[in-house]
Image: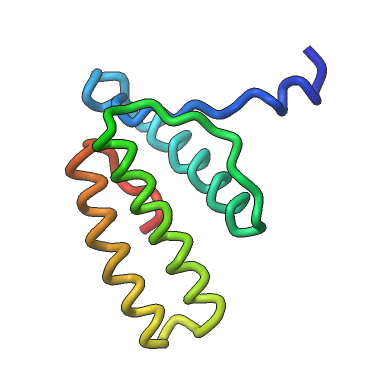
Length: 111
């Protein structure tokens, strides 16, 4: 398989890994890296090339928290870390990340 073909393989994120008992420190590190890559892609306007497996509730928790993470990063860049916009978006993100963690049993990697 050529390098170009390897790059077209989507990343698969399994949000049910903890529920299935398939999680360790290495898997958590990999999840953080995968979500970090996806966030970078979204920040430059590209769609992340990934596939997400999990229950509808797990996927919803990921997408909600991921969207709030993007919004918070944008507020940090646009208004600065001490702005009311950044503080407000951080509050929403913190609540959503806690819900993600309760729903999936996985730690939100961007803290």
